[in-house]
Image 1 (cartoon, rainbow, N blue to C red):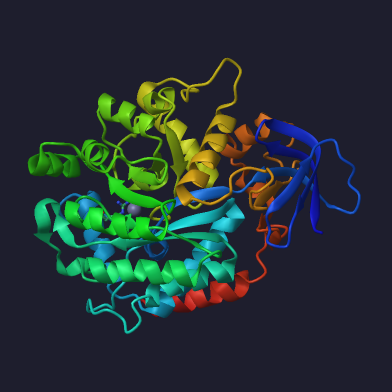
Image 2 (image 1 turned 120 degrees about the vertical axis):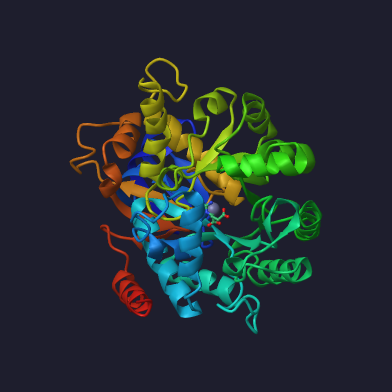
Length: 453
Ligand code: NGQ
Ligand code: ZN
């Protein structure tokens, strides 16, 4: 049976030395033994559980860097969104698959071993359903398969242009689906891929889904699987909060807490703008806040109230969202950095004296990510998938660091390059910083981009 012998490894109780890890043919860990002999196990240096990416719109990878020119009237989230709609209007299925495959390879190399794809491109550029409604979902699944990343697929329900049932705009026509067709898509995907990928749902936002459809899609999911994940965007922009107040006299997170009673199955994405009361209630709900600080910075969203939320034991995970940044260490660094810049203080994530901020962030995101993706990941422990990052402690960013200091160096000292090998489900998907299919995947990505011009 396959096994690894790690000189040092991050286990649920902390760092352990000379750890032997065995797993079965399905890639599930069967035993973890510290202070073991290497035997015939393959050696690794410092081993971490791979990170989950809680929020991704893969196609946006190909527009990263294209929206950084001043527009005529001052730019914001909403003008960015218009550019994004024009961009996606051109993409065909081959391009969507090529972009996602390239992105997922980049994610693996940077330390994400699983991704929750918040997938809302369903229709063709004219807004017509493809002959196979799962056409584009299947392209995402194919891209994940080609890269080897673990996938939680969240088909998105998108029906309206704003609160109160405002009609969707032309730019949104590729997203739209009737509730029945959506439910059928979710069911067929879940059945076709059971045991291989996790399927949940993502009602896009309270702007895009009316309460009735939200309840209906959740009820259908519950009939399939009462543990399947549910993700929703909430309160990313102040205009969204104002519009929600005008519609319901409640704020988006408040509305969701009141009406949907989110629990461990839920991830609320962004939640940038919350009152102290919403922050406490969300923390107490057991749901995960899906935080995407590089995208939130890029789009000018604001600061999530991380310090108060963590003080209330709130659960969080990180996501690459629009894919302007594709590294968990960068997202985690910016979670802390935002508050340093804001408060002009350091080491703000709540921690006991002497505790490592990098370790608190990495470990928090592992736990929240596993919960939000609804997969047995995020820990080196029996029953979890064998999804690991093997760090090279001789890398200049890590040399001289040990234990939690490795995580501080990874998060705060540009240590992503020290991720040397990456394993998903007991198989190496990155060796010595290379993915075996990276050249072929990059070549089809280049071809896809050339066709966009
Ligand atoms: C999205 N992205 O669905 O891709 C959104 C923008 C919207 C982010 N919010 C569209 N970062 O929220 O309406
Ligand atoms: Zn999003």
